[in-house]
Image (tube, rainbow, N blue to C red; front, top):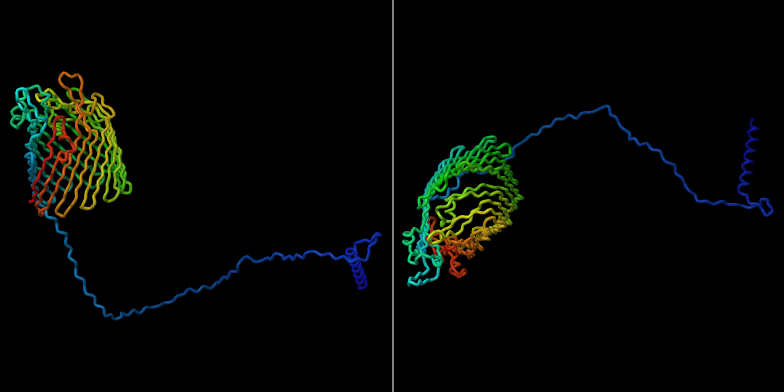
Length: 588
């Protein structure tokens, strides 16, 4: 067996050697036989490392025996001796600031050129937690003359110097009381006022009467009945609740009565009752306002009556205010009645306490009374009837805010659409041809308003305002009679010394057109009136805590000749030129 294995092993070795020799010596000689040549094969060595296989899981030690630590320790505190002995604090005594002294009364008395007299008196109670009452009295008058024309010499030799008496007097006396309860406040006041005006504004060259009948002195106006006195008695009462609870109905009611009468025994009564009920539901306020107006007057037969109902919804937050309402107003005259509906929308938005844009869209049936017309123009006829104005649309869009702590502004634009708006025109039916009547017209009007306020501490204060009126459409008249195109004003106050303040005022009204309709004319004639330029300067000096003195210089534009003559407040009615007023104020 072993011999057979040895033979096979020898044969295998020989076979391998013969194959190796053939592989290394494969080159043949030229004659086709293998030659004895040596061939060496050279190649790049590339080592190869096989991937390693590793165990990716970490070994875990599971300890079946757990020892919970359990130990106890004690702290032995010991107070250390100290040498500090603080002084005990005494209890502080809280004491309120002393209240400022309040005077019960205030009096003002001043006299000046043109025999001007100005007096005021106030007396009221001092601090009271539940009641406030007082009385007040005022008087203002002047007895000067005004130049209405140049000197005129008539054929009969009569000389008219062009100066006439232009006095007036206005007086008022009243009393008021206010009573405050836990949830209600009651108010009441009564006032009586009287004003006398002389119809001095006439043009002598237009009159056809005897020049000897021209009124010149005060007695001439009284004897010729060229004056008028208006008197008003007013009584007002009101009650207002203030319940702080949500879902509690609050109310505010008021009743006022005005009795107007003149020297010719014309009478007008105005009774006005208002009521407002509102309730807060969560953050919203829901309410209803109502108003009842009754106007019995001698020139009205029968009486006028108005009734208004206005439901609304209000939302007030820190940065946003909104009111949504609808106003319904009804007018009743004899058997006829008119119903009018107007929006009542107001929006305000506060942006970072710096800028506040706002907008409103409202309307109203505005009742006109002789009381209101005579306050506006005291030289009107006393035998005319008045009509209400229908303000169909009153749209206002504006923005107000502050540029800095010292500068505030307010700018807005307005659009008005009104039916039956009244305008004053000269009525030539009177002897002196110097009374005013009223004409009515529908109109559309744009307004632009701007206001700037500057307050630099207590030293300097400035205020400027300007209003521009542009009538885009007038239905029944050619011009907006005697309405100014623009109005502007400037007020300045400066503290020269702690006891001395000076202040100045300037007013400018632009072009105005007066409507003239002479007897026999078939159409209105236009007369352009001079602009109003009024500059006033004043000073106040504090003599003591209770006594001060003041001086005012009025209509300085006339003194420095900014205008050719005194401006007219109404057509043919010039105002006083330069005049002064000085007096004292005393608190007691």
